Length: 261
Length: 337
Image 1 (cartoon, rainbow over the protein chains, first blue to last red):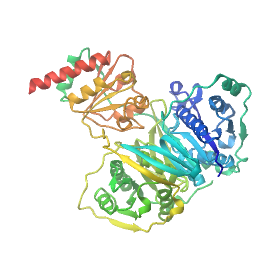
Image 2 (image 1 turned 90 degrees about the horizontal axis):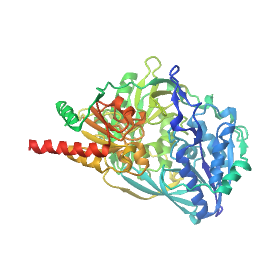
Image 3 (image 1 turned 90 degrees about the vertical axis):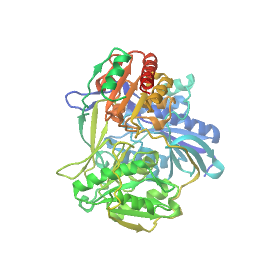
Image 4 (image 1 turned 30 degrees about the vertical axis):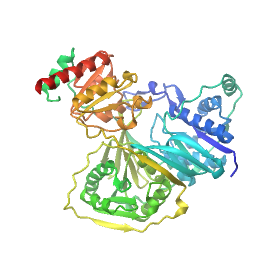
């Protein structure tokens, strides 16, 4: 393996969390009005990728899967310092759940000869966290999830990570190639430099790949997705007293009469 | 369609018993209790899966907690947890034994494992479920989870693929009391993986006292409105003999440890008294606390949605109300003494 690393950072365009509403008639999520933005945890992934490149050398390529306008999140990544951007775009990808999504990302990681794939912990719109380990599983690569710190060891073809676990941490050395999911807030993302930002918005054009370019057209999309949404319900509200009190004394009295304190 | 299987060949409900150094994660016992209900409803068996180096005592405990059968795979390669060997052994077991449903705890280890194994088994995996049901006519698993940004629950199904897998965060379901008289079968499985499945090595594993807020009788929780100052929350929790908790925002701001996060991606708690201060009341947070007996909301915004989900609300500055409440409770306790 080369001393310099091919670093691929997976990013996702998501509806702005503050902008999503529920359609009162259908009960489905109304994401159409929401502004599309870069998934917030992905800023940590981009930062981690750029830091790795600074330490080891190599390139950072941002990859996203989505409609043509998802190019915007690649521009954000390139503006922050990624060397290049790749857009997986094809109607065939439509309706993919995490299984085919991780397949497509695994295929492009292979195509780009990645040594390290970095992604955010989870997306803010579906928050499954399943895609990074899915990519690793499709390619039979190593995986490091909930990563709080990274230490590259290029001389050993290894990436060492501190992983957050319940009540403590693990220090794990993973062989390359490796898929990393960084913890949300694990680093302080940099601000885009002005020149790079202008370049990303004016000159940068992503390379585009279709499902058939990756040879996976039969294995993506709705039909290849094991899960489906069986319905949406409004959450059952628990009946509450909803009593407003004016003073702390009234509150203490009420809680005492209930035996709550 | 790719990966489709004969779903009739798949039966039984499996629960992955997450363990570290021979100690089971509590969420595994919670899932075993839920798995028991699902298996009874389907008229099928509940099977616990334990992997590790010396874990036979966990097999016995799994039976006392509801399993009909326990698959035990003992080998040094399974201690500590690493996704490579665990994933490959699981794939082998699923291929041989064809489980219909597999439940996995939504801990960091559990989610690392679930995401890894769902791919080679072509399973339908649903993350962070807060309700699990069996659909009466089809016997399909209905995996329910709150969806992004709103007051809605999505039901996720897996119709043509098996197994149907779900992760569930700690505290969502209650563990069953062990029944020492229960009987079940322990099946020892030969380790089917070798070093070729190991892609990583553990350099060190450091675990201190695991904070567990899921059993607390009183919880005082803070959100974005604390602006990082949890002092008044800690003071009130102390005088009430309770635990401090927080929203996801507060955890992500680095104000408080992740183990104290309440909500869909944190813990589910069911205290007698839950006091929410500076918390607006996002559905993802409510999902983790709405089984509390009595809920008190303190917020300076009279329109905060949390007031709709509270028994008692008080509008005002939490930095004035909490200390006053702490003093009032303390005074009453001293009066009693």
